[in-house]
Image (cartoon, rainbow, N blue to C red; front, side):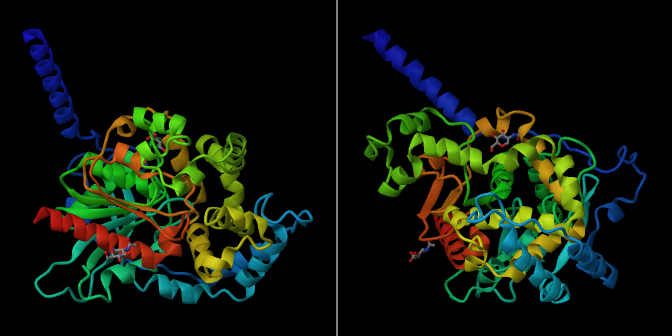
Length: 460
Ligand SMILES: *[C@@H]1O[C@H](CO)[C@@H](O)[C@H](O)[C@H]1NC(C)=O
Ligand SMILES: CC(=O)N[C@H]1CO[C@H](CO)[C@@H](O)[C@@H]1O
């Protein structure tokens, strides 16, 4: 009897110790330098100059537009196969229509004005210029303060994906809603953020750089939102400084290191959905016929293999050809919004987005010449293997998950909870795909409101 009690006490103590230890685990990272050459010696440059936050505006010129038009005019069309729709990639016949719109109707100067609607800035961190938007609410409800929120995009998106969402958060129409103060950076190597000049800039580096950005702007604690790579970067932010991130809201979360519960649910969940909390929709989405699952993932992951291995080769072609670049980027906006769009002649592109918005995102890649550096982020992430400290580490920051039905990889609540141990809200959304912030800004804004209110209430 005594030994049993002793054993129980020892085991209990051990579990308590392990749980406590993991809860206080913080991801470690060391400062980096991504500028050209060696970092400046101490006292070289004036620190105030080096860390200044400078206003920035997107600009264009006649030369830029003439160059673009010349290259578009010289494209060499390829007839698409009969009845191939979007199954062989971006349909060439439809591409002709998109490009004709781009060449003759799309007004980049007008779009530049729209992009400049919000205040842009740049500041140098770890040797590279980081571009970001900083949007403050015009008024905050009496007796409250604006809620700081960083929003991080992914590939092949940009800060522009958030243009529909930002005003809903900064100027909410419902008087009971919180007013957010939004910081929206470009990932290094994306859009107007400078590309790292050295190897090794991964999601943890991006997370560290964005923490430095938020500190420089004077935020002690803030919320974070992300999808696609933005999911991993904001997750790493929560792991680096759990005290600083008040709440984490994501709409993408593929399991990085499936634990026992996830593995069991994969093996048994189809026959016994209840114990795993699987809904009918979960079962349908998680367990298509095995062959279909395999074929689908091979069909749709080729881009990832290229970008994670030889981004600089194919990237050069895209950087020289606006038409090639548009096809490469916009194919994703079609298929990742709805896989069934591959059956349509026009890829369903304008069912959810306007050509003006889609081409503005393409122009951000084109004018900044960032496609190669944007693709390299895959290489830095995958070449060092999947078993990184951050993929094993759990997240204890309050988390909200928006589960969109057409997301690339479906993650049921159980799976999200395995990683995010304080999952406060999990919303099964009525509609929307991978670019949810751009496709369904209203739903996303509502969910961010609901989640943030839940966190704020809990604190009181
Ligand atoms: C947010 O909360 C409100 C009130 O509880 C609810 O009606 C609405 O459906 C929620 N919206 C989302 C997107 O979660
Ligand atoms: C080096 C690195 O950070 N690798 C990560 C890339 O992303 C996956 C998740 O998609 C992680 O599991 C890896 O650890």
